[in-house]
Image (cartoon, rainbow, N blue to C red; front, side, top):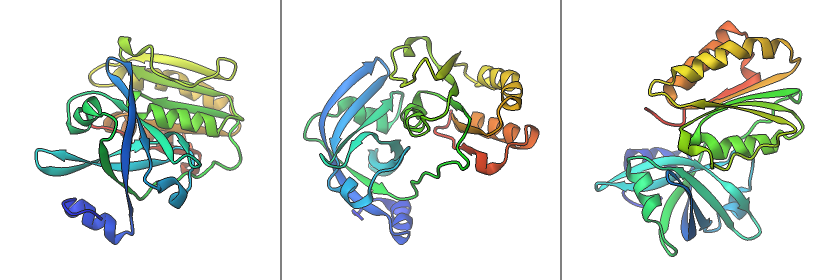
Length: 241
């Protein structure tokens, strides 16, 4: 573990987290507020293997203090030792790093806690709720569960229409929901449609990955009011408003 990661780094070290250094090889501006950064993995993929929705913790400098954020791998290639990361740009040290990233830049990363449990039995329909911050994980999930059709509620701003949502119109229904400051519209639309859809699905799987508040609200609703068993759903807050 590199020096200067603070108490979070010390805890991760005790938990036997593995550390790697990534190197930037290029960047792409997908939209005004969404950037893809290409990297070499510093030997990570050969050491850890790859699974769907795999993520890493990156360490950023935040005014002289260490700050870590988790990002999902995009198109990991173990043979080449490469992958990409996608950043929904806003204020903050992680977005500042992504905006300024150029070939040759390096960043430290920690691998710990990531995992993927495939739902059993296989889902007959996937219900996914996400936004630009969780888009890489959403794409990875849909790719992993490609045997099932999916309904996707995707909360985004009007200028996010070019984001790389990897869906197949033949199998995936995408319901775009305009982002509101409090996330209420997304919650309302999901609550309006999901009960009927679940009632027509023998083996559903529900995946929720939005801001922390919205994720908590919808997760509680799905578990307590709709009665979806915990092994048939996954919920994780990806950012704080």
